[in-house]
Image (cartoon, rainbow, N blue to C red):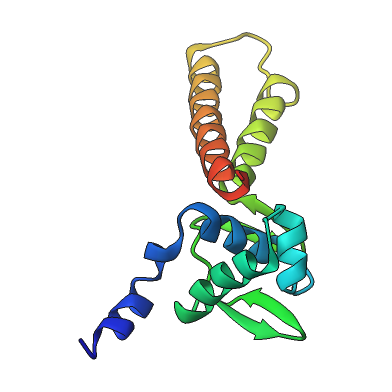
Length: 147
């Protein structure tokens, strides 16, 4: 019984469902630490006590911490994301941009005078890689940005 709180803190993903997940996402994506009323207004919660309840769950699980009159994400639970200030995007988008750039280069600068099998093969492989990275990027973005 005494080890239960420790076990809960080690498995912090259990608290990230429903409104608690929405509150974590909101805090995670802010460049300035939001307070309880900011979270309530930003997520259109019914009262400040609802926001406070979910913030307390996140604090108890070590996912956020209090800072400068607000709360900041202390742990990153979303996998494969990049955060620059307030901008958050899936890391797979970087791969998508890379493969799209390669595709454009293949069609313009690197296009041979006579199209051959290796050129077509490189285009097909690039499009497959672009498709997979774009699909994964959209899948991760839905997890991060859904309400």
